[in-house]
Length: 112
Ligand SMILES: [Zn+2]
Image (tube, rainbow, N blue to C red; front, side):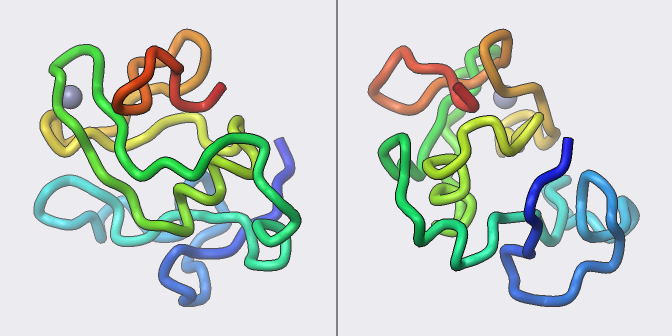
């Protein structure tokens, strides 16, 4: 998949892979220190879904909140990410039609 990439932090990416930073630089909670987002000008073109900041992991029920740029990236291009972080499980799991997450207050799968 080719997608336009920028980083949530605004820093230059360290890697050009599924994550812009090396795996060994994860935070103590298991989350990558940075994430890809669509560039500002791409997100400014308009959203095809509401901008939502919180999702629940169906497996454990934990609600995780995300930074605005990532929420806007989902709203602009719902299939942008293949997985997302659960702060309860401290790991990444699949999103999409067969994924493990729903937007809080809905039955809508994250990434659809
Ligand atoms: Zn979980």
